[in-house]
Amino acid sequence: QLQLVESGGGSVQPGGSLRLSCAASEFTLDYYAIAWFRQAPGKEREGVSCISATDGSTYYKDSVKGRFTISRDKDKNTMYLQMNNLKPEDTAVYYCAAGGVMCTYYKDTYEGMEYWGKGMLVTVSS
View 1 (tube, helix red, strand yellow):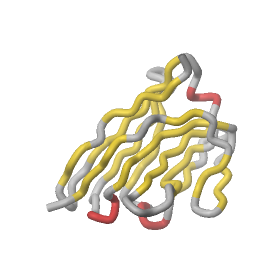
View 2 (cartoon, one colour):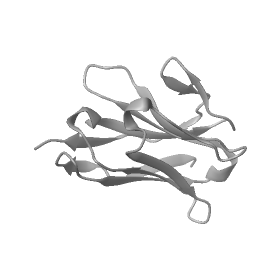
View 3 (cartoon, helix red, strand yellow):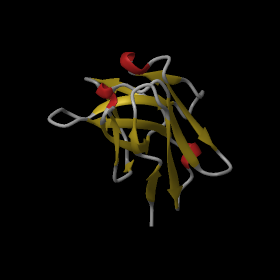
View 4 (tube, one colour):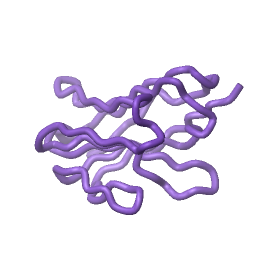
């Protein structure tokens, strides 16, 4: 069964760190552009970060630049989002996704994603 399985969410204090993981099953993650999205309560889902499959270029939402790092491990068929210096406004349900080969950013999201994780909650609070 083609799926993305997420792990690593949870609660952390402001300034803390979390690493989100997303393992692909029954398909090769390295063939696709991969991205992380988030949806905060009462808000639309937004694209946070993306890696292109063509040249490995990475893209980040302005508000997370310098704090978040997206990566993939080809051997483990897994993608990651390292989140440092977390802020309360980072609180959201985070989703991983894969699809296409390029990161096509339009209206605050990355288009063309075919496979989605179920989402996991990240809460940043003191």
